[in-house]
Length: 302
Image (cartoon, rainbow, N blue to C red):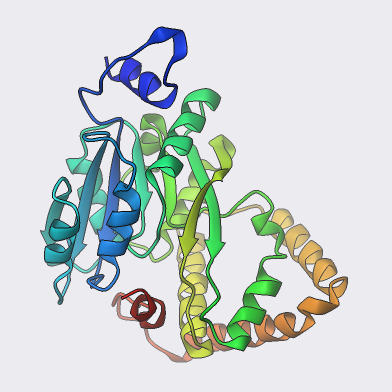
């Protein structure tokens, strides 16, 4: 029945089907750490145009020291809001997966804005392609960012990594894909973990857009990039790697694109500066497992 419901919801009018949803077609897990300023915006955007009971929404508030849980409950009465004192995104994801009742799970970061229509597009792509991972197109809202940050993103978007889309903050995983992922290990870059584990069985859905609020300041950008680099090092230590020849090829293509695009040269300089500063930050600063969060973008959303 759930299979028929999924197809009836995703393909309305096919073969005259008019099956009313008797259970949600997917579970949406939203890990949230001190997201009081933006969780309402995220939930309001997600539920606008959503059919009643169409999605099972699970917000996992982890280690919050603010009113994230109350804000989530107020914004979406249908959401299941869980709370844990452990400030860990991967632990929150594992809790959400265990609590989910649907075979297909959509993962959504608490500071990302997307729509019910984009969720349906991911699910439809999984159903049509028989893949295990479907991910959408990230739109970076840099309008309120400082000039150096805007330059960084102008150059960064030339990275071949974006040619097939970016797995980050909003994606759907099938039942088989969840089995392949297993329990999320304790690591920083969970999105890259998913990408590397399911890359060969993934599909990019550019019509399924989502909006990312980047860091507003250069110092915040360096902080975020240091987290990414640290996360990649953790994945390498777990023997979860991409092919070195692929990385080298992408690096060469990236440099050629930058060289052939004079309007991105300033951004290339900022990119090099940020990368150097981020790596140095990881070398000189001890990391004790605390959740690092960019406050500038969240303040802008509040």
